[in-house]
Length: 490
Ligand code: ADP
Image (cartoon, rainbow, N blue to C red):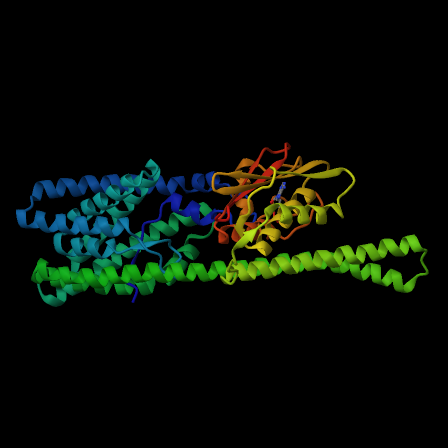
């Protein structure tokens, strides 16, 4: 069941629909939000002016008519409930009009029970309290408040037209109040969205009607139930709180679950794209070298060069597949660490010697360590993998200079640092490079390929060994990747 209403959507709501936050590794075109808001300005101004006039008339009517203490108490309770409901909106799957709140049910009840003027004022107060509390920009607060004032007045007017003092009249009053509230809300939303997007009003309006009609029908029936119960006794109406609350919580939960599923799906697509791209490059080289070796008579030097290409690219394929396996183990929680006493210097030396075998002539690599460093509590395979990834990155991302791998005990931890004199990493990217698939140069304009998995794996492995990893870097001045692991117990 989806009792809900369409929340009055402001320009900022709309802007956020057009300009979602960029996701990892996905580069969205810049959207000129200012242009959108400028187009919608006439609608916003008209709605705000109409809202101010409506609110003035409502206040004048209430002042001249006066209210009894019982009415004031009932209105205050409904106002408080509407404000709380408005402050905790929830998303409804398939509804295009942003998040919804149950406040409409309460505002419609106010309109059917206390008339248009009170509904306009309560609509204003509900929205104003919530929006001011959220410190939203003034234009947004004004627009959203005006929408609630106008929707509340329309709902109260419609209810007064059909109420005849009977039970059926009360139900019909609630239903027509709900329909009016919904129509005003949706029409103003469609107007602002169609102006901003420069699309036909009728199309936007039809879309919103279609996507919100089911929640509206449920909201209207809940409003009618609330009005009938409240009319009997406001105390009895309190029993509606439980199903309403349960519905809101359930919607939030289901939305969160669906969002997570979408994120998995997106990651899967990204994974397939990145891995196929990374597989294609070495395969093409191996295929080209194999064809040349088969088809042509080659001298020894050329033949050896081609065989070097085959073995280097095959090793690259192997590393990529290793990365994929590590990611799969980490993501499915199958990367348990088997902690042992490990001679860190021995592992570092092994990794550095391995890197020296294919070091470009412009690069040098050295190890710095204290005399007889104490053993660390680590999983040797995982420690080796982390060091291999970091040393290979230092080679890949520094064209020339010295790479220093250092070991240094620090309290009850061992600090490993891999320092290069390469490209460096901008400050605002330093946390993101540890995310899966995140690359600073996704289009490979610098010609350095990679899957964006290496640092994600390093972080996962270090954390599984109770360690910590981070980077210190200044663009153009090189980077130092540092990780710490516990020392082995004496
Ligand atoms: P990959 O190297 O396969 O792209 P990583 O996860 O190892 O993936 O690294 C993620 C990104 O972090 C790299 O694409 C690169 O932009 C940046 N990076 C990693 N190491 C360094 C380094 N030593 N110097 C500069 N940038 C680096």
